[in-house]
Every structure is written in C-alpha cells, then in structure tokens.
View (cartoon, rainbow, N blue to C red):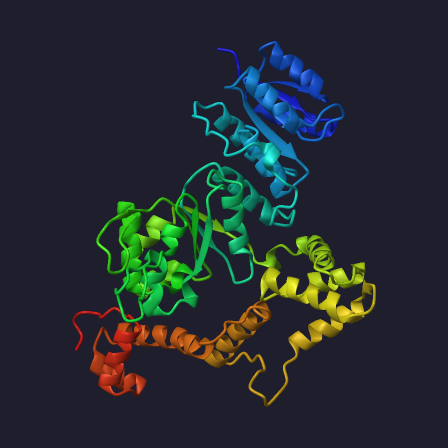
Length: 481
C-alpha cells in the first residue's frame, strides 16, 4: 500500500524544506511547490490525499483557492497555515472549507498530528456562512500565541450550536467572544441576548430569564417575556453564571435538560430554541466543592470550555491593542493620537489587573485629557503612577496582610476594570454578600454542619445565622445541629 500523498504549497523555500522532511520521516509522500498555480494543477490531476497551503503566495491567495478545490474534490482535506495570525484569517479559512488552521510559527509535531487527523474518515461540518460576509473589523485583537488558540477554537465552534463555557478574569473580553460566536455563526440572523447574573436581584432572576404572567406576583401588571423567549432562534449569553442563585440554577438545569420552560405563573410550555453561551470569572469547580454551584449544571454548560488569557499573559498584543483603541477614540470624535515606543514598552510592563478593559479605559483617558499629539513615556508614567500609588492612612493602600489585603487587591482590580461602567447601586451589599457567603459556608463545613458551633465561631446569634443561611441560599450540611 502506497504512502498517503501530501500536496504542500508555500512560497518560503525554508518552510517547504522543513515540512517536507518532517512529513517524509513520518511516512508520507510529499509534493511541494511555491505557487498556487502548481498546486491547482496537481489537484486537477487527481493527485494528493491532503493539501497544506499557505495564505499569501505570489500568484494567488491560498484562501481564494480553497472553494475551487472543494468544488472539484469535495472530500480533499485542506490545512491552512498562515503568518496572518488574526481571528479573521482563522474564521475565513474555516468558513471556506479548510479542515484546520495553523498559525505560523507552528509546532511540527502538531502539523503531523493534524495531517493524520485529516486523513481519517471524519464527516465534514457545513460552513456557517459565506466567507464573503466576513469583515476585517472583528472584535478580538492580538496575534500572540495565547490568542491563537482562542481563534482556532472559535473558528471550530462558529459552525456549531454547541454550548460554550467561557472562563476568564474580569476585563478579558468574555462578551466580545460570545458576540463573535453569534455574529459569525449559524444563528447570526437571530437575536443576541445578554444577561448578567450578578446584576439581577435574587427575587427577580427567574422572571428575568423566563418571563412572567400578569398577576404572577405583586407588581406584575402585564405579561413580560423573559430572556430565553427574547433569544428564540439566536444566542443567550449568561454572563457571570457563577453568581446565579441555587434555585435559579435548578430551573436552568431543567430547561437545558427538557428544552422547554414555563413563565413564572404560567402553565404552557415554551420551546427553548437558543444557543447557550455562559461565562464566569469564578472557578466553578471550587464553587461546586463549596456547595454554591450545581455539578450537574456545570457539566451541561461546560460542553466546550474556552479560557481567555489575561492581558499579562499576552503583553506582546498591547501595541496592537493600543493603536486599535486610539483609532476607536478618534472615530468617537476625540483628537487623533499616536504613541511612542518607549511608552508602549512601559505599558507592556504593567501588570494590568483590569485586563483589556483597563487598557482601553487608560487609552481613552490619553485621548481625552492630553493635548499632546504623541503619547510619551512621561504621560504613561504619570498615569500608571496614579494607579499604582499606595497612600498611607486612607484605607485604600494595597497591603499584603492576609484577608484584608486580598480583598483590597480584588476591589482595586474591580474598580480599575469598571471605571466607566460601575453599577447603578447595590455594590456595598454585593461585596458583603460575596465575602459573607463563603465565610459562613466554610465555617459550616469546618464544624461539620453544627450550626450552634458555627454561630459561636462566627460570633453570631444562632437565629441570625439561620436567617443568613436561608437568605444566602447556603446548602445545609446534614448531620449537624
């Protein structure tokens, strides 16, 4: 039996040599060329069991060649490799029919593994939309290795209806990723409905998600549609899913299992036809261990996990992000600015606790408050110094002193990331709740559910502790008093 033949097209002779040698050692026969014309000639002749092609070649764009190859030989798998490492390239390659997309530089072992998978008999997935519908103005910016894996995962997910769980720190762009999955997916003509679990009062969350009938509760003067119904035929983005109360988790699980729901006060089942994308900055497995999140709901939502890297892990993207935000500021009517290399280098060395959102807010500040046409190192140093100040005696200093310092650092990151979108109200109660709930939960675990002992440890009246357990939806550990 003859070895599978790989057709390789890349105008870089060094890459052709390295890839040819590696694939030959792996047991494949390789025909390599530096032009799209020769690749097309081989395909027309019926040669090759799999194609590997670069995007930019001297005579034709490799992406433009893909549809022609697929029309002539539908089952021929195509692997695209490119130094144009953007989400646009990854999505365009996938939507035009590529089997896989590999950003340069790539690991040669990964390429060999991809070739082996491409030669297996795996059914193709229909593309979600015409590649001609794509725009260069996609919402995610960056060419770092950390972002490449995000782009590749997104490109695979866009033609599907799979449920996705996005995990990442505040400010990393979780909603942007959710919107990209919707806007370039098979449900793009339907609505995109986003709901933040942390922003909805506990007593209103079921009505918010599922709607309510007139008279269902005090103040329900008319029938109201919920987010599930509003998202019919489209995508429902459940942001900060880790903050969802336990009762609402139970009802959400039932909807995901049965594919239908009823409004609050209603009796007629309504079909739930929405793709679910969830997101959180929490460690949900830790919340499960603490009894704060349902394990069965986690498995329903975590069909495809997608982790967004913090900005400190992709600092090489900062220059591109800064220029993007400066251009956006100009489009919003602010004066056009440039930034010098020393300033960019200093920004790349900042820790960015608020991630990309913090960077965007800072760039907007540059554009709005400074008369200079070029943002200099001095300007950047001045702004970052204000953010990194640790004044004594005012209660805002960042100190490494146990719980107080940890909470302080968390709040400093929150305010850095939400300068322009602070909640309208309720932040004080929300912060107290986030500290109080794990404190009581862990105390109950330590006392094996003995509420009398837990109340003593906490310094609370037993009836007060019982009320807090009920109000905070803390699971009761059986066996204690």
